Length: 176
Image 1 (tube, rainbow, N blue to C red):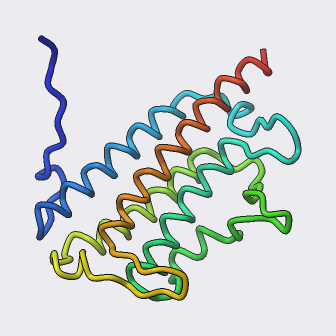
Image 2: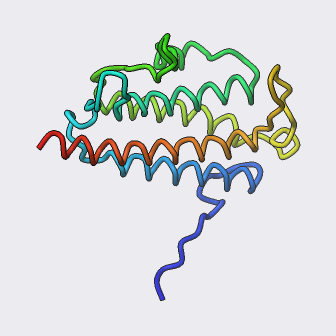
């Protein structure tokens, strides 16, 4: 038999074991995303099938922006602070509703942004109690709990990692 893979809630030290488990799943998801882009050539990071499509760099920006937005808008019910806003200078979408094109951003800058947002998210959740984790936030269009937000962020990043994998393969083939 092979190795049994499991998520250890003690990986992320947290007040509540359940929240620690979610943060561990987020860490695992992020490590898979970073592994996906590791050793990707710069020209492939910025490759787009057309001018209206996103590239890998655009998707990494989008992942960080969405994570920060859900953390502040839905969980903390506060505006994005300046220390994160300086790393997220663009809106999410252009006037046509497509993901914003950030251009040829260095991979190190994308990874630093992802890390800063994640560190802020982790700092928010490690001290949260279970009652607050499950307390609904009432927003104009829906109600949401921090627990659901973490579920959503896991799904969101995993879906975009699939796009990143596809873009990496197509971009590598196109750049041969």
